[in-house]
Amino acid sequence: MIADIAREVAGERAEVVSLMGAGVDPHLYKPTRSDIATLMSADIVFYNGLLLEGKMTDSLVRAASAGRRVWAVSEGIEESFLLEPEAFAGHFDPHVWMDPIAWAKAVEVVRARLVEADPEGRSGYESRATAYLERLNELHAYAQRVLGSVPERQRVLVTAHDAFNYFGRRYGFEVVGIQGISTESEAGVADIEALVSLLVERKIGAVFVESTVSERNIRALIAGAAARGQTVAVGGELFSDAMGTPGSYEGTYIGMIDHNATVVARALGGVAPERGLSGRLGASGD
Image: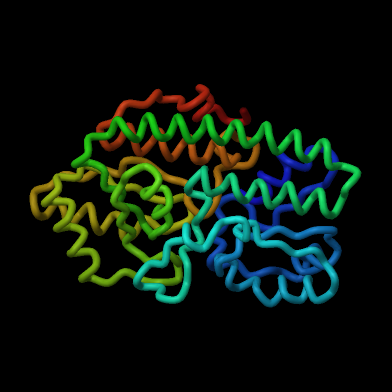
């Protein structure tokens, strides 16, 4: 997601390298020697922050100590906006990109830091950032419309791990993750049973798998609900900690959120076009 912002704002004025590819879980990612060499040779390094890249902290500190420009894109988001789940007392939920309005602040950080590092490119950075921010506003308006069409009783988003809290708060959904905000945590039998009861009591017909998380717990949830007479389907695969396939529309931040909003709305009884905001969902290589 961060590399996508950098490409949009930098345009052809910079070479953008993403250390984490499609389907990679940032909670668990460990930098290779090649990654460290890339960090140490970069003119500027952007990362999410809020402890998302926990296993990369030492490498980021080393790069900063060596004089690299190292910036957390979440620095532009006010602390009062951040969520602090009970299970992670003392730590904020790092999945801020799930709210397009919050992620716009990250765009502003990238724009400002690029201008600071390369003042001669100011005009281009600012014009491209402005255009991209307008597209984020369109994305938000679309998500608000289609997710707002979901019946209130069905506005429960059950996913493999707790990555959708900001998404849920922005669009009025109760969010339940089987695992915590980090994929390193594990769900117990009691967690599964409690969620099964929720599905049955609320008559929730769909739950969602994630592209970077095992489906095992979701499948256990579906089986548990079936044993109690409630049919629950997989509403679709959502993108949480990584975007879709590189080169596809879903492989961009806008495509990722468009996909998530469209899939959730359609699976939970709302109204949304099958191909999403601009008719590009599912078109490989678009």
